[in-house]
Length: 155
Image (cartoon, rainbow, N blue to C red; front, top):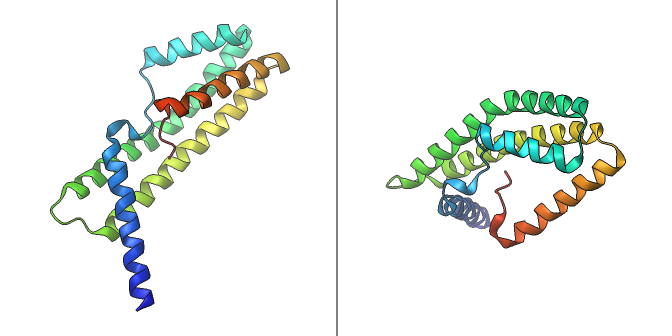
């Protein structure tokens, strides 16, 4: 009896999580900006941090490398969310399947997050102490904005 109740509760929890994700809409998961947005961001950060030409070139290489690795994962992640939403929109979504798809999407999101963290570590290694301090201030400001509805989904 306890096992059946525990399993049922687990399935309800997974279904609830999936419904919350669905209610968040397409902006719930992280999306990269357009190439123009990224170029503007790179230019802004180069000026704000006072990057040298060598640092800018190295940063562009880091960005290009991570973008190449992340693109197929992001496409997979988008497809996972589309499939999950289609399942949720079906007449009788199976809670186990919803949970499995949610876990798979989360795992892909974690891979994307790991790539981002690796790239940031490489970028930070390029910076001198003053530049690292400036970057830390930008990161702190970003975290402060998360509390005002600007938070992006963290997979």
